[in-house]
Length: 146
Image (cartoon, rainbow, N blue to C red; front, side, top):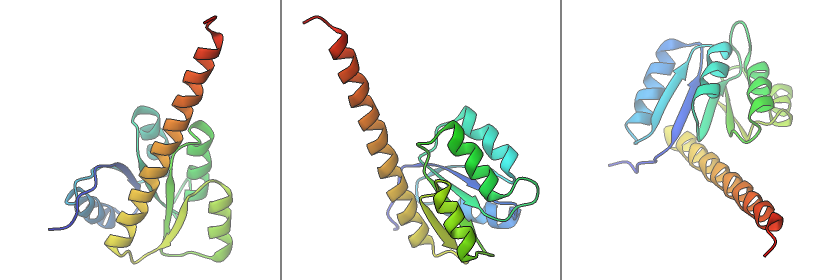
């Protein structure tokens, strides 16, 4: 049986059949998965839920993946976003990474590879949260006149 990974994941892709199958495969590995078919929907979901990782398609109608990435990162810079594309160029990959993506993966996907990337993204997010909590505790302790 495949190894399970407890993670809250958002998948954003305009190809609904791909989205459905990909979500089912991740759920089969123990993940809680939300889906969005466009950038606007993804931005709304990120405002209402916590995600360990976001897998975001680069090419979508309306708000594309780069714009979605920038909007999400502007409001929540700690989110770990993995860009996904079937139409990638080196320039777009570089732009995505400069805009805050943690990785850039091309379709077709190898499930174990993307699960590894999601696990890595979750670890990074946990470390960021722990660091912020330690800094916050340190600030609180410095205000006390012990």
